[in-house]
Image 1 (cartoon, rainbow, N blue to C red):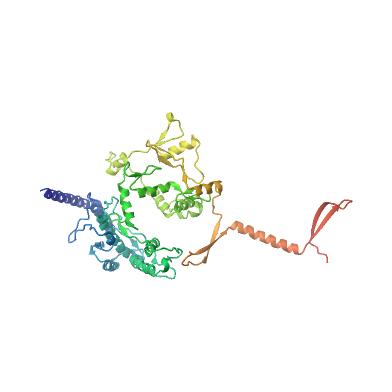
Image 2: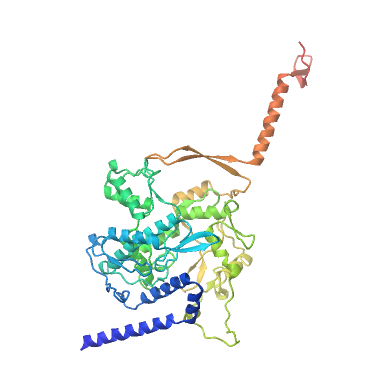
Amino acid sequence: MAENSENLDTAKLKVVRCREWLQNQNDPKKLSLQNQNDIQFIIETNAHRKKFLLSAADDHATVPAGIDEPSLEPQAVPLRKLRQEKLQMLCEWQSCMCYFTNYEQFQKHVAKHASDLHVIDVNGSVEYVCLWDICGHKTSDFNEMVRHINYHAYHARLLAIGFNGRATLKLERCKKDSTKRNQLPPLKSPHCCMWVGCSESFNSIQAFFDHVKAHIYYSDEFLCSWAGCGAVFPRRVLLTMHVRSHTKERLIACFHCGHHFACNRKLSDHLLRQNVHPGTGFECSMCGLPCASAYLTREHERQHVSAYACALCDMSAPSPAALAHHARYRHLADHTRSHACPHCPYRAVTKWDLLKHIPTHTRKRKRKRGKDGEKRELSEEEEEVKKKVKKKYACHMCPEKEVKVFSRGTRLTTHLVKVHGAQWPFGHSRFRYQISEDGMYRLTTTRFEFEDVSKKIVDGYSWPKESLTNEFEFDLKRTADATETSPQKFEITLKNNKTSESSDKNKENMDTSDDKSKNSVEIMMCDVDEDGNIISTETIQSDVVYT
């Protein structure tokens, strides 16, 4: 009887979910959108459908099967055979939805959809649209679209591996948005093999990986001959794992959100991070941030320790990427602002900064009242934002009885600068705050560094350096090609218009002075006393040469 009641409850739950989904599909906004643009309607409808179907409360819930579709359940597979056995690869092309268990047959099937692309005429040129579910990729280059479709086959295999990995690795369900699970990275150029002595290129990502594996198999002494690497390993397995860092090969993907990872542990960390709450799990000893595991705690604590020193100021960074980011924005900002805004004189350092800036010209303020002037009810998202606990920033320099508390870090920064005269170290662009035991955010007054980094700053970099400016220009010239053990070599020379002009003038002056010296005579006149000692001397230069 208990089993029958459970079955009835699950059946009722499915009926309620289907009813909600149907009501969502009858939205008048969607119907008007369907009449305006069929392709956009398909993309957004599929996105809402996938987000709804993958938002079940059960940890092991799967996408409900449609008409004439087999029901899918994650299957527990031995860990060593997770990437080979019982894979259920789904072709998500519009009106296809075929399942395959053989990867080679699946690749051939997906490649045939290159002839089923939707073609749009845009100002006399042809634009191809991918009809894969929740994709909508557009391009005018047919070869790029072929690479894109082949990548869908590769990505679908990773999703199938991640789907079975939920049962094999006993993973919890992902809670992130699934509307972008099939959006792929850009593939503007072919997949090129950079193994020394090889110049092959491929439109199929899997064919590219298979080609590189052949290089690894025939590699002598387990040497990585990727251009500019030259790393040597004791075993072939380690060489194979290393080459993936060059080819960007991934082994598993999250079935819900579509993110793909280089190993199973990365997927496990991806899911563990979503189930961390304050007061549970592991906490960082420096900032108190809760982490999901001891490994993630160690990785997070590395961000607090600076291991690299800037040669232009007193700044230190925890990683080479952070140091490069600092130099790009702090010392090379004038050089690197190459992305111009089409609406204002602003120029961004990176394309990402420009994409974040452009919406400021079109963003509209949210109104709290409706069109008729009456107060509207807040949505669930707005209520959650309203319920969030506001941060409090306390000044550590004020007396204990007169501690001032601010609602924003910028206001505390203004207070520290104007009232207490605080200044951030040279190289830093702002103050940083961390949470204290009482829940207040206070100024971070300590910086953790390696001993050799501190010595570099104290001994050699303890004074402000001049930042690079636009007056400097550089010439880049390649002097040597890449070999098995060495990268390409370039020669960088400083080219400055002002210095070159001054040097040219100096050369002209030197040339004229040399000509004059060749055709002139120097005569030294000396005054002596009675004993023959030189009192004073005078040099006279004459252009007249006596013979």
